[in-house]
Amino acid sequence: MKKPKWVVEKEQQKRASAAETVWLFGLHAVRDALLNPARQRLRLIVTLNAQAKLADAIAESGMEPEVVDPRKFTAPLDPQSVHQGAALEVKPLDWGRLEDVCVGHPDRVPRVVLLDRVTDPHNVGAILRSAEVFGACAVIGTRHHSAPETGALAKTASGALERQPYLRVRNLAEAMESLKAMGYIVLGLDGTAEQTIEQALEGRKDRPVALVMGAEGPGLREKTRQICDQLVKIAFAGEFGSLNVSNAAAVALYASMGKEG
Image: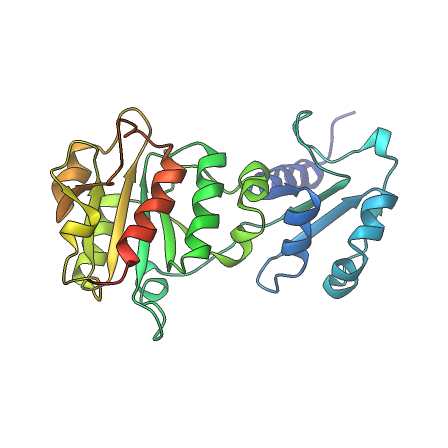
C-alpha cells in the first residue's frame, strides 16, 4: 500500500532533522551538555547505572530519560564508542559571529587558534581542552575539511565543547583577514620558520594573537601561509622537533602568553 504524501513528507523532514543533530556519549560529555543552558537537547538514553550517576544533571535539565538494558543500548553510536551507558542527542551549538566571539575578555589579552584542515576529532577535542585552559576566545575551523561537532570530539574535549567556542567558518582566509582587521597578529606555525613564537612576539604580547595550525603532514596551505603576518616555530630542546598538532597548539598558546622579559 502506497504511503500518503503527508506521511512521506513527514518522514523526509524527520530524516533531514536527524541529519542536523549530534549524538554525544560518555558520562562526562553528557553531563556537561545536560548542564549547558545553551545546548538544545532532544533525546537522552541511559542505563540504570548511568542514570544514577547523572541524576543531578538529569534533574536540572528537566529531561525525561529513556532507560535501557545495557545489553540493548539503542543509541545510534559507533560500536567502538565507549558510551558508559549514556548518550544524548543534541543540536550543534551556535556560538554566533566571529567578530563578536573574538573581541575577548577585558581581563585578558585575546588569543585565538585557527585550524587549517585539521580533521581528526580527537585532535580538535584536545585543542578545545587546551584552548579552555589557556582562556582562548575561540578555536576556529572551516565548515568543510575540519572536524565537525561529533560524539568522539566531545568525549575527547572532556566537557570543553560546551564551554569553549568552536566556530566553523565558510572561508579560513576571510576569517584571518577579519581578525587582522580587529588588530590581531596572525602567526602561522611552521617547523621551518626562522623565528620562534616568543621572538616574533617580543614586546608585543599585549596584542591579540591568532595562532594558525596546519594539518599534520601537509601543514599550512600556501594561501594560508601568505595571509599570515609571520611564520613561526616552537622552540624545542634536542632533536625532537615534531609535535602532534594538539600538543603543538597547547605549547603555542602557552608560548604566546608568556610574560615579557
